[in-house]
Length: 221
Image 1 (cartoon, rainbow, N blue to C red):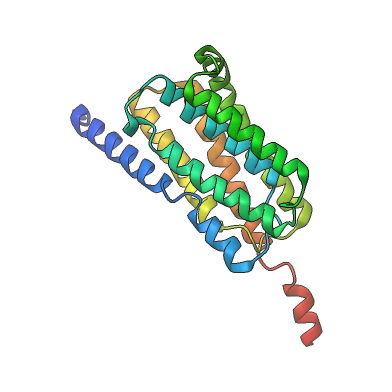
Image 2: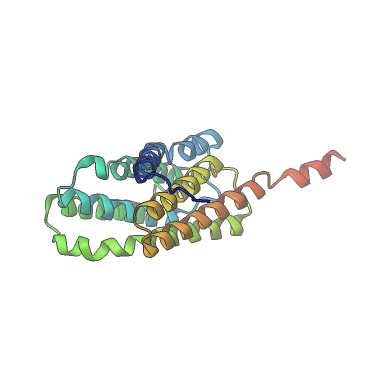
């Protein structure tokens, strides 16, 4: 019996469609988390350090693409996620009572100064090219930090499970598209690791969603 291979054109169409879906979903990646923090009006269980590490990764990638004058559609998700990340960091700092800290204001000023230097060309493009490969370990480390924060606080009431589901899903779809397009082992390892970490954060967040439930039940009895 002869087994017919799938038409390469169909595979390419499937891969491209999955890429478009992935990018589209990334446009709302942080929105559920932002809405969750606004709803519960606290940010316990969310790591500021983890968010700053994510912000660093997104900033480097956006600046590198912008400075290289790549087509905006090829990296449009980065500035959109970056805006969402800045809003989320502001809310987390607000509800953790850190906005009055002088270190927060100094850090904010330093960040926007560095961002401007990246975008207008004060910082050399070679520096950005050096920093880009570091975005993979930085992004993965931010998830490890967030996971550790959840395990430390044992409270995920302010953590959006939907955001981490989206993160796991989009990383998984990237595994599929990369496997079909190039099968690059480095990229496959990167997205596999991010899929696993995002899934773990989602599962731990589900587990710690109602930290006071046992005490409430006991009191009712």
